[in-house]
Image (cartoon, rainbow, N blue to C red; front, side, top):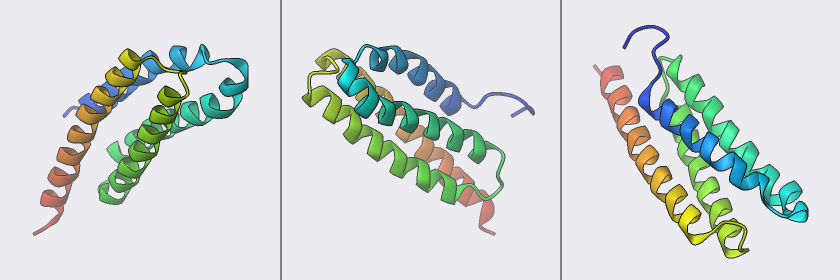
Length: 118
């Protein structure tokens, strides 16, 4: 990978972020400032962790944190769906995207670990 080149997992996460933030912005006012803020913060935190992992040689711990944050996000999205803040279609789409990104992160972590073991 060339310096400055964007990793596919980061690009996909960024696209998920761009897709999800307007949906969160449509939450009713009372939920926008509670659940909406939590979702937005979680999505941006994961983006920041992925960028951080890109520049670390020992990225396994960061990718473990990313997986934990993804799980938190899954539950927040489930809560938003169960509270009728996200449509079934949007919830399904977000779940599918999270699954694909999670698979990529797992592959990235395995590749990183295999390079660091002698």
